[in-house]
Image (cartoon, rainbow, N blue to C red):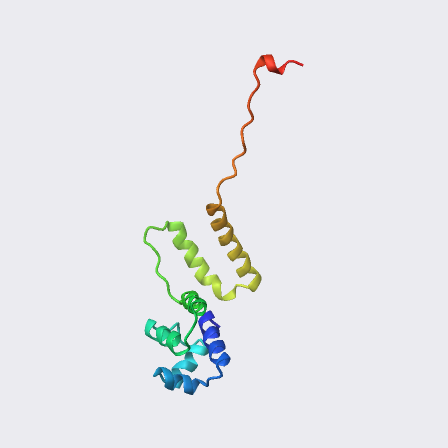
Length: 140
């Protein structure tokens, strides 16, 4: 299930609204809402998202979370044509492997990506150079 499908279902449950009621309030068919919650359809349009924000009077935190789950639920993505040939092969391999990835493998891949991000954001911890002693100072 996509993050958006889960979010929409939980939001509706928190507010105690049936799919048919929400569909009527938002001006959509109940079948469409069902398809969204069952992850049969990809994330909805910006218009749907804006109606959802307004109809449920979402807080800024809930709105941010909603936008994040919509982004995470995208099924198609475009990437720059400036990536390397190796990156194209990696994307192909990843696309083929994605359905069979275990939870542990997904967590490991996310940690690798987070590690790179952390390393790039942290300033290098360059050790302080020791001051060399002059020959006179080094006598014992």
